[in-house]
Length: 120
Image 1 (tube, rainbow, N blue to C red):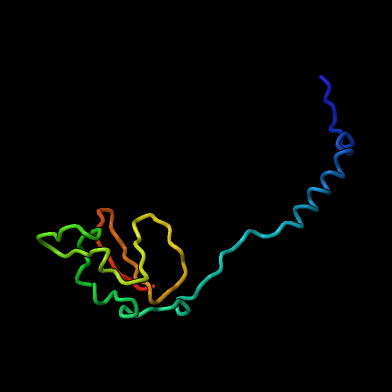
Image 2 (cartoon, helix red, strand yellow):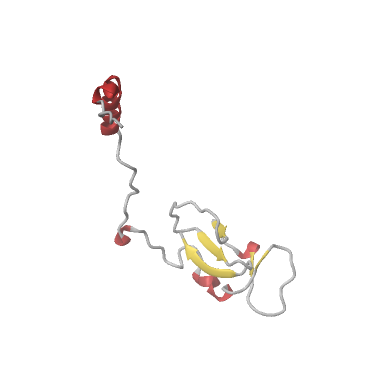
């Protein structure tokens, strides 16, 4: 049985293509890195700047539409009681990252109860 030797000249016509691929790889940009934010640089809003402090006693209760009867027990928060501007944040929902100290954020749990109130 005879063995044939490897013929590197068989791949010679592909050499210019390999150089082109290397050139493209060298010119590619690095992967995008998100900017890092220092904790001290994040804005902080006072709970009084949006009205969250005055509604803290409603945490744990349901968020009710306007015009529905009051529940007989426990805390609740009615949409008509919310100051402007406000936004309702449900679990898994997307929210903009713009910071507005005068905006009340009402965070609900999976059952529609008020989990927390924040400004921003």
